[in-house]
Image (cartoon, helix red, strand yellow):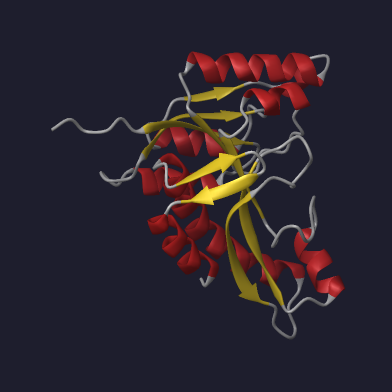
Length: 218
């Protein structure tokens, strides 16, 4: 009986790559449906590159500052991903806004984790903004990437309560714990074909629907 080929995944980072580490660790499991074949950063000094190399993952730096515009940087990034025969791209703290052409070229094959319960608090400073808004639940979201920032169809979410006395740092500390649980679980769903993108909607099979309910209740 042949073993199904694993989905080839690239992780894009700009910094220390804590979510990257959670994905790499999850992918070590023999039954995980994805393998991490490349970690790529737009910052050669990103600490996550060394962490990935220590884990035996191929790494590459493409410094965006060496390119005159977004189009040329995105073209170099696209070429590197395709040379590595990547099937799926995971953004993990990658602090670049892509051109629409790049996003369209990877439509349905690129996911991101965002530190809020989208569609609330798109963009940055999400924890401070959640506290300012007085919400009682905050959390994180894994979604497909579309040209509009933080607006893609949602794969999975995890929520944490906002506590009296929270500041942005304490709230972030609780959210990142859930990010490290949610992202590997969501990647397993996508890489394993348990969810798929149809138009602008995420479609789940029966097993994935049950798993997603568990993710939502973390």
